Image 1 (cartoon, rainbow, N blue to C red):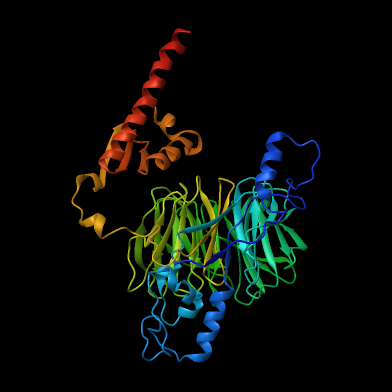
Image 2 (spheres, rainbow, N blue to C red; image 1 turned 180 degrees about the horizontal axis):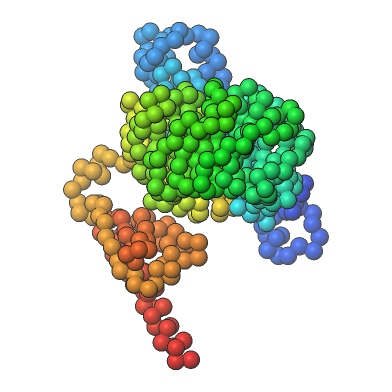
Length: 509
């Protein structure tokens, strides 16, 4: 399912140009390469996601139809609505996700269509991002401590400015959307107005990185966590630290305040998830489900479900009413680095991994323990942050590969990212069967992985296989068809032979 795509007129300040972007037209003494790039940008037609027409459809239906739990399929009792068919002709009938909340079509939340890729000139890894109030623009924070502002419809570059002296770590809006909090790797917290003007600056956590910030439901307090193994509660108005929560044995990597109650959840490098009472400053409960660093925690808007992600490649869902683990979700082949609940559909969330994989999940009574949709190579490197558009029709992802990507709904009838069944599964041909194989690497594990995983990532892209290096056993695990596995073994074998042939020459030298 897809939003309406159209071609706007090109703008001169897109793609890294404009104020502070370092790439605007008109610069003197530019090289031939820069001139060629600017010429290509002038002729570039950018796609954009227009959500105004779907919004008008929802408003019209809201005025002229009664509530119907199956409004997307019935025509007799729902004001003669037309069927939504898997065909492009039904695109004009598709509204925003908020129009289907009474009877959600969760497949519309699996945003596997890559709408646009943005990358500012002289860019650095994108550490965190957030939609501005109303969802008109996307705000990103990079490793150099700079804000970058992108248009949320045409995806054009708008602004870049210096915000912190160290790398960004997180950003969080207050519930009333009147203020923004940001933190960096030097233990600094800053207040910002909606116009991105600085208001206040605080130093805390002994100048250690502050990994997460979260507002209380009333917006009068907020909580922070850092590498000094503490969770700290702050008063918003007086800018003072009220309480220090101690109990973790190592760096605290994530924290989030309950959406409606006086309850804080934190995850740490000591593999523990703790629930805190911010008033008493005591630990209420400890969850021992993970076997490695807990990287993210996230409350569902229903206030009952708690989602945790870890470097043990697992995502766990807890029901805090019973303090019980509902399910353990395994779909990532590397550590899980980011998670985000859908803003409208209660049971849907997405997750990003260290290897750049983007997964969409549907949990709950009608959900599954397997990913509902998968984008294997969404990014080349770790996905540090994921943020849904407030309307739920678009997703933004920021990565260590220095790119910010926008994901939208597929066009009607498209199956991009969804599990492929039917003809392919009914076909008993051995060439289509997914197999698993292993290949001995010996002392050349690092050669196959490459610098920051570049070699194995490029090989996965080229062959379409899933590959994982078991560094303990020193073997390469391959998942794919027989032909794909043979191609991988041939390429890896040639790489190892080349390395082995070089070693005697170096020793003789």
